[in-house]
Image 1 (tube, helix red, strand yellow):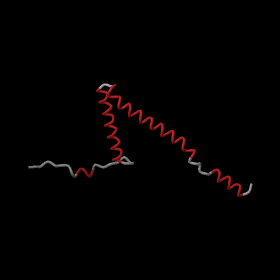
Image 2: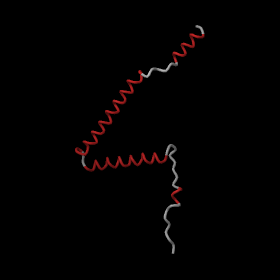
Image 3: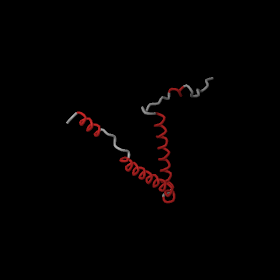
Length: 97
């Protein structure tokens, strides 16, 4: 095997696959995702008609806590650290007479 043949084989082995090969699985994933989102929306609309009030209250609390957790995750950032130090000077102090 000559050097140009080896280079051609190496180039063929490292060639980037065409985008057409990725179009089908991505399309199926998007279709499944849309189907799951649609099913969740329909279940959310039908649930109050079928489920008891206390169960709806519990599901609402789960969503509220989930939203609070996502907000705290956004607040703390990647490292999970946040400081309450800047807020210590802004607390009102009682007057002494």
